[in-house]
Image 1 (cartoon, rainbow, N blue to C red):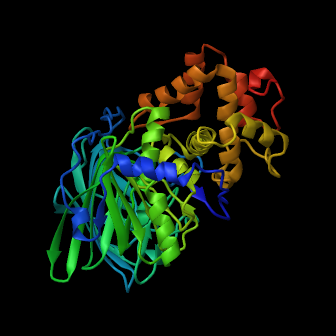
Image 2 (image 1 turned 90 degrees about the vertical axis):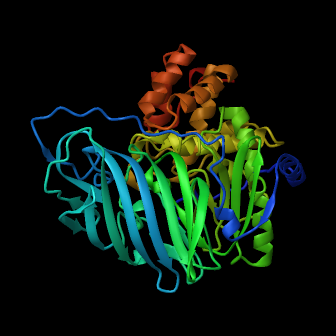
Image 3 (image 1 turned 45 degrees about the horizontal axis):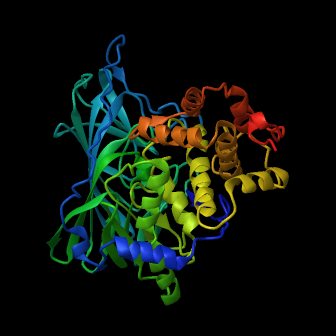
Length: 503
């Protein structure tokens, strides 16, 4: 994620010459210009990878009992729920622009990991009914927690579908100081971090529990819908059109998104990876032109990242530039979203695309592990600059070490605390840590560590401790002191070769 104040102020670096990027994109892709129903037609790409969360073995226990209302995250204790593993979400909603109202249903297919007498889902909108295995069941809905009370115990290890029907105005709801719903009478964008799912579909809202998703959004004819994954068809009923998208790889709930309105859409294939981009027609002509130029860089930048990090982890890529005044870009899985920006802010695009490896495919185990996402994505933006005519990441590290920002060392980025989880220091010091590690272990070992990390935990989640152990093993070094100095200490690390700051 990259944000504007108060969370993050994006700073532009020297970008690669625009002409080089556009030549690379146009020579390697097939562009289809247009918008509307054609964007939501066609089969899933042949290279899409079907991955699901590994089955959770039934947990032994004293007997049937309720599921927990929190997964145990140290920063947001009520996020997620214990007692089950979600396998799929089938989301089917209708959006009314003028009333800014969402209605519909979501079928959550899950497998209990112990015998459950009840279970919780994270959700905010008013609920009209809940069905388990097709039968109506009682439920209690208080704020963020939807508690489902089936009349019979849900046995461990047996798949079951919980269907929730609901309707409401998402913009009227708040939870955990999250940005919430963003919409005008012409356009809506559903994105947010660390929370967004509870505003539009019930979920086990934590990165530890990923699932495949289908997303169907019905809007008035003349509007388009762009979401995660790949379009799987449209259907019409009177003045309404339903647009369907399918995300075949497992996805954390907060990374699910959709935007609806009127867009200029492009699609193609680059290096075997299908892509779709969209630019809001609500932008003024100059911003619209700049956004189209920037989005043309998406497929070629995805290809470049593959040369650095290994195979792209998903079946499609792309991006969307919103016409809404949003304060941040966000790495929604397969299709990041961006605010209006310049035509050459390639580092911004690289940052969000790098999250597809670090944060989306390999998710954090807890939000305290945020360095594994933001530090890594920021480092890849530096790597792009140094390989495209900019200064080296090492030169940047040494300048930041000497000057830095005010309050650079005031907290530990390895456990920043809830208030600082998206602070600028996590980005900058996170990238500094990786460049310092690169200096310590050497070029070949460093890139081996990053590639092995992204392949080892692909489709799952992992922690800082997991990364520390992997880096130590692959480098054949004891890196405990290194990571303590860079991630945990609240003072500037000593200038020494062992910490990546030697002459």
